[in-house]
Amino acid sequence: MATGGGMIPNHPPGAPLIDYDPPSPSGGNVASLDSVQDKRFSTAVLLCPKHPDATLFEDDHAGDQLCLKCGLVVGERTIFVGSEMIPFTGIEERAGDEEELDDEVESELHLIDLNGDLASSFDDSLGAMSSSEERLFKAADNIRTMADLMHLGRTIVDRANQLFQQVHSGQHLKGHSTDALAATCLHIACRLVEVPQSFADVCAVSSIHIKEIGNCFKLILEALKITVPPITATDLMPRFCGNLNLGYPIEKLACYIGRKAVELNIVPGRSPISVAATAIFMAAYASDKQFAKNELSNGTGVANATIRTVYKLMRPRAAELFPEDFNLDLTKLPRS
Image 1 (tube, rainbow, N blue to C red):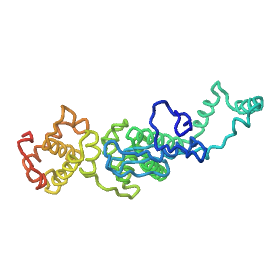
Image 2: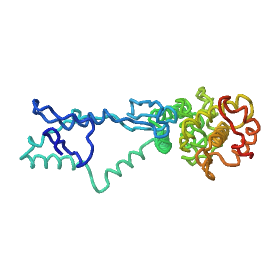
Image 3: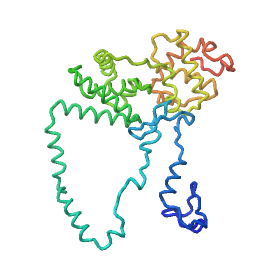
Image 4: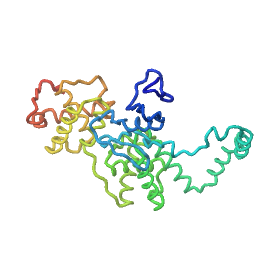
């Protein structure tokens, strides 16, 4: 494709140009591929698919960009390394040096045994680890795997690893498994960076029972003498509403309902997760949005029976739970 007398390298036929300024006739120079790529990167706009209006937090260490509402990793390793960072010898300078290049490759390949010695040496290094080092290695691997499944950023992973090392170095909780401690440290790390995940969320990506995580949670907080902010129903709304593809108006209304239910002491002792799911149910139905069977349960992780139980507490006082300026039609809310 010719544009302004120049060819754009590697441009697919028919693909649109992105901010490509053709060179001026007087200049006589064709824009380099790097300049076109730089402009393409500069015009890329990342948005959270669940919360397009949310502010993104950039993790400089990992190069990730996170949604501040739900913690989703929107962009991974967005740092662009330009060609100036990659030194190489030009093809023209290496022309005719095939024998020299072959010698260099051969000298490097002798270090690698393609029959498996490299893998066996790695296994030997693992076998040479002390039990303490092996436990740290296993915990870090578990934390990274769970974080990937939950789409959590590197900042949370690093914080969870630090917590586990503190627990491990202090010889705390000797009777508990590495998997349970790693899962609990990940949960605490989420709470500390204000991207709250429930015990059930962590259990869903691990093999640990929720009661064991609950026990480890209390013991770790006591051992490390740290406090974490409590999870509220409103903390969970962005993620739950994102899972259910609900718009911001319903999310905002659900936050109001959940907050009022707690303020009026309508749901004493109930889990914030259950309150959040029920508030979403009421906000959606009042806004003419109905759920298919098990849709709400799958999107929030709360059983239908639990939602019905909490709903029986909130439905009789629905008029108090909705904003005054909301045109509430109680007939839209199921009686049970």
